[in-house]
Image 1 (cartoon, helix red, strand yellow):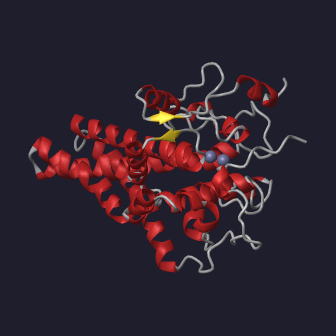
Image 2 (cartoon, helix red, strand yellow):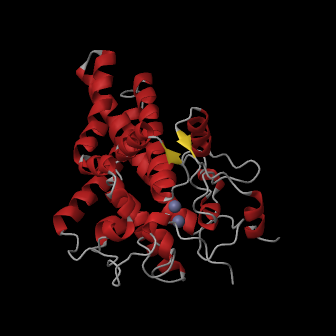
Image 3 (cartoon, protein in one colour):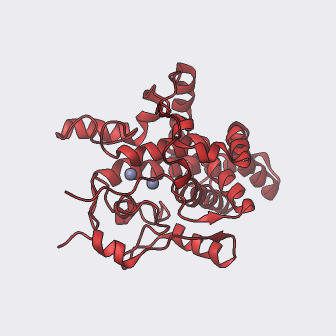
Length: 323
Ligand SMILES: [Zn+2]
Ligand SMILES: [Zn+2]
């Protein structure tokens, strides 16, 4: 038996004073309209990637597009990894107000759902991790190859448009519901989706002073960038709970996957993350590159981030899988 990992919740949301705990799901299930919208946001960028290959074949991709796409990938990607994940979900560091607002906005630009919804689902993932109640476990249908194939698809993306259950923010994110800035940014999610897709087009159009430049920037830095970031983020839920190395003892199937380390900005060191969820660095072993941890380190040096939970050598040694 391995020791149960700490719950990924902050002190402030621990025991409720009420006798009856708040239910984990919202009383109203997610309606068809909401699930179809999510489905469209999953598949339209994916179609853009399918169209990208012929478009890139000699025309329709300029250096301007590549630069804008990279900048938007990094900003929205770090918004998810440093912001939604390490800061808002797990409290692995404190952020001053401007940084907290910037991280909530940047993460929203990834179009992976609003900040409160994202955090509520992810805290539920850690609470149940590969057991009944986990919103996206690849093992939910069983261990044989057919079930795992189905489970991989479900954990990667289908849970977002098939699951009718809605995680209760009141139960999982009371800390965020008390923060007026976060609640406001959560409400502004739809306008931020337009910003995320529209800003690249605007920049591309202004740089090239052409409608074609606006279109290709929208295509590459809007749609294709969102698709790539989606599938990298979702690979952490699917691939990093299926294959990879178990460097640290966990009660679930989370694994470290080295080849996703760079595109996932350090999030694919997912086995360590489940072993020590509040740790600000996920790539703790030699050679495990973790770009997000480096960014948090820069924020700390600038004085914007404080109380950073850097790896504790003794605690990690105790969790290390003996070889
Ligand atoms: Zn996590
Ligand atoms: Zn996980």
